[in-house]
Length: 389
Ligand SMILES: NC(=O)CC[C@H](N)C(=O)O
Image 1 (cartoon, helix red, strand yellow):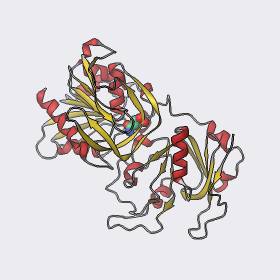
Image 2: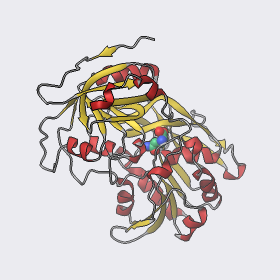
Image 3: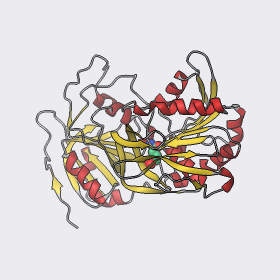
Image 4: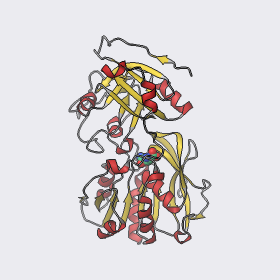
């Protein structure tokens, strides 16, 4: 196997004083750049994000747990970091790959630099590599395991082997590692209209915030909550969040079947969409390199409208894509279901709608953090579903 080496700069960068760092893919491909963020070593699944903005929201999205994110945007860190645009309490990516970090961020909201946070939270990154070449490689070969090595860690001679020794994403159960350990409540803003039990599989902060704006009191529950725990909240609706890992390993599918059987209105986002798919009896599969970015076109079959949406998923639901209703393969008593939303870049299932139960879900991110707000109507649909019930 050839092991091309690109951007070979083994010396400390004279302008920034950064030490050399090495990125090694599991197929042996190696990129050399400079240390960015914490120094040391890290591993994960290499994935690329095409968002030109929103790095803070990306880094703090718990769905990126165990993934090393490659940014195709060439400049990263230009607007620094603030405390408002975080989606959770910390950075979740296991590594960060950028072309050209901002030397001096400039934004009135910034309280510190992005690299300050990466260093403080021990997130190992690499800069100065051709992130577009790396992205093309991942598009051709598919997402794969990667390691980043800097400082004394870069001196080891068995780097490829150490990357190949890491666990793969397929088959990984990770939601329990990022979920809250204690339940908590986000109060409704203004008049309280509904109570929702939201299962935290890696929830982003903007999601309960938007629900609260719709008059919903949100009870955020740990990922291992039982149907009895959910029912104890006396919810008008149940929500399953986004989250990391392979949906095929998620034990929450059984809980969701109980929710569906009880006919409680249900809304799921991303991982929540994959779990609705599995609860209804469809399979899920790993995409070659996934969708990550904030400009993905999706068709809503209900209205015929195309919306531009934020995505972060590596798996997808395997259901009939023509939009024709089929009986839920898992259980005929769940009635008919159809693919309600479809990705226009590659025809991937982006939403499901039950026709005989009050349940629907989308594979993308209507909470729009970061991303366009085209899909905000889905929170209104959830409210309508609870109103009708
Ligand atoms: N953002 C998410 O919820 C991601 C779901 C799942 N872990 C995937 O990669 O497809």
